[in-house]
Image 1: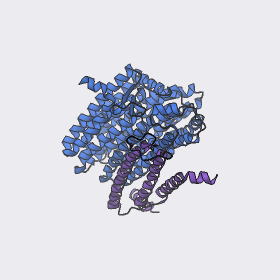
Image 2 (image 1 turned 90 degrees about the horizontal axis):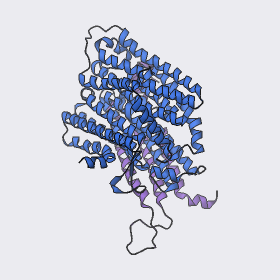
Image 3 (image 1 turned 60 degrees about the vertical axis):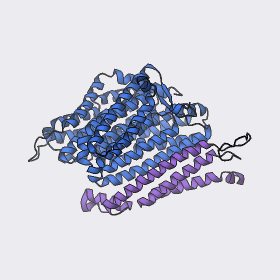
Image 4 (image 1 turned 45 degrees about the horizontal axis):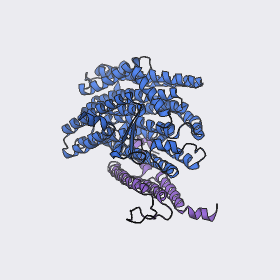
Length: 497
Length: 130
């Protein structure tokens, strides 16, 4: 049995949640659905832990799906870069499912509650699939599995606010355009090379610098994935989708879906195309870098003026993607280490922050900033969790946020661009403004008349505080995360995977 | 650009026209159903692109003919990929239309500018009217 698990470990990551999802449809009871999803996500998390362990001992794992050898068959290829992303997705999924029950009972219509867990499992399966696959077309299929379930999950927020429906349809249109652009790009690459395997593609397109088809494919893939990542001017779907989705969905999306898209983008930029192409170096320097800087500032400033805290954090997510993009645009081993670690760290901090907001939503039925007056006294644990998560978001020492920003600043010095370090510090100061606005209202405004102390239930507090503790633990003990992130950077930059 | 080039790339011209028409409809139309139709036309153009890539000059349908060795077959792989993409396209359309039904139920309209105005009025009161 154990041999079987080890042998088929890469496939099991995707197959377990995928097979488990329809089981809920057979017995649509909310309690069963939650228990089953809980069991599945924790199993997946354990499997992903085994996978990370395996990757530490060998450089990469190649798995032939159905026994068909690559490049003809579909290959699952796991190295440090995607093992990290898979662990993020599986870990967050397990914590979110633990957290979800009370919040979903309060926010989603009764008969739809079991379906939420079906969608969550499908989305987990799709996201892990995107991360694990070594086949460009297979990536598209998984991207659509995760996206379709995401659109539906966003729409589940429609009972609370009908704007969830328009947000979902806008996300569907943008997301589908993005995915279709990606498929066009893959088709163009197939036209030139006759292969869909990423490693094989990397070898086949070597030296095709002036091939306009390859250049067009690059443009289509970068824009297509850029829409999914929500790179600054392509982010318009994100704030509404995050704001009007049910709290649990927002936690899961903010912590995982953009991270997986960033990973896919890095995979294509550095493994398939690679910085050996002049057109790629040009687009990194003249397209990605300016967009990254604009992304660090403009959404942060917009966030500082929001009245809905959920929306504020959504804009802050777009700004954080700016930091990841900055690391990508410098394209050195150090900067990619910073981006990879920020993928992990940002998942920890945003999940903790949105979990705190989900608890606030459960008790106060609102996340408008003025309604949060005095929650420091009525919900002390939740507010403390939010404040610590906020400190991490700013990048205060002893939190994970500091580690990512420190590495990013070091990377910009190493790339002879010290002015970038200055910009990183200044943009972090804007984060101080928007985090402070919330903390000020929560702690220093008087408690409104008639509101009693009412803390969130333990089932929500525990996952939230696990994440808050992780924010601090990985901010102090950085050994594991930095080692994994630098291995990931090497794996990405190491030419063909 | 010779006439031979233009005629030889006949399929690609059609693909580009469909692709741009589809994308234009998505961006320019306010009606959500029309947007979804545009999105489908856009996706269909990609199906055609893949099928065109799979064509081998003089090739026949990729079904093995027993005993014949000098037969040229078309490349079946793009066809198979597109079967998957068609399924994805149909599912996207289904989810999209289901959402449009919900929008119609809750807002009473599926015109985008009216939806935007309804949201602005909900947020800012009368001041949100355009």
